[in-house]
Length: 474
Ligand code: GLU
Image 1 (tube, protein in one colour):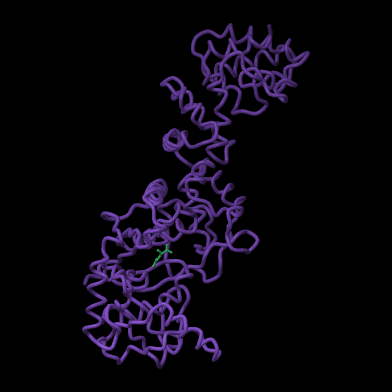
Image 2: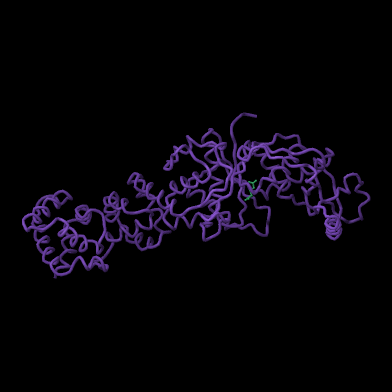
């Protein structure tokens, strides 16, 4: 066996990829990338009633959007059932597991009896030594593992530390049901072993499973992978994460206009830190991440922080990269499809040119759609209330002068030539620059805020700019 790190993300396809699952995937991915290893993907679709193709598709789509790539083909756990059966039978042959033949009613009676004595409802191990020939004919047995009865099972967890489980609390749990289907507990161990997984990183709701799974590893004589159980995400108020707190599928975050890189940065910082660094690129995270540095305490999800961080990433991002993500995300954004429908080559060029100014004012891509609206607006522009206030009375006279001045600009139409003309006009007329710029902005964009007005003039071009201004003075 080489020392190459192999991690895995093992979602159950019973719903979309939720934000907690995305963080688990991220930690597996970061650790694999940091160590030069690989991350595998296993779809835990053994629960046939609750698993759906649509959920699997949503999980793959969410991971892809986030850029959390996996190595090789995704593995279906269900398809590996024959192998799970084979290992369970092997354990019987090795004397580490046995067939048990209780009916559901007998099992219930056993639990009742334990409860009556004030004991936890555990299986009593009655078929450990009995011969299967004693079973009533026709009864199909379930395979149970012989769990150790004394001492303790220790999970050496890189996040939780050494966690000890008294073996008297473990009973002989089922690894293969009487219908021949493996239990979840068993399937995970066989799959992780066969897939060569060296590091298990998952939510701390699986910590007690780790003890039971250790029993199976030991029975097969297999190495137990390194374990890291990461704390779950809680809401800002400390309560378990609910929809209101942000327990949504990652596609909801895409629709809200968050950048994958910002969302990953935010999720990485939930429970992990690197000094005082708040803003991290993917490269930074890969370089800095170590699973051993993840905190034990529950992390709290805070929308305001995510939004602020998204604003920072938006402003920092290279314009072409931001443009590409923006265009690719348009179909999912509020107001985006209408904009996408009008995105011809000219509009694309205008959008790219306006992006440096637009991104200064947008914390999300949804805000970017809103900010870019003026580029796509049809004349005569709808003017919002605040902009209308900027266009009243004297402002119209100023605008008339500005229009004449701009009409006279000869040669190149650029932000610099427009600015020079407007400055001259303001100075000659004794106007403050703002008294000219504000009505201009209102006429050009229909809004009271926008990127710098000279940039707006440049992006819209001579003809469209003059026409929009003229619309407001006639
Ligand atoms: N399928 C399990 C889940 O979605 C994860 C199992 C594991 O990581 O071992 O919670």
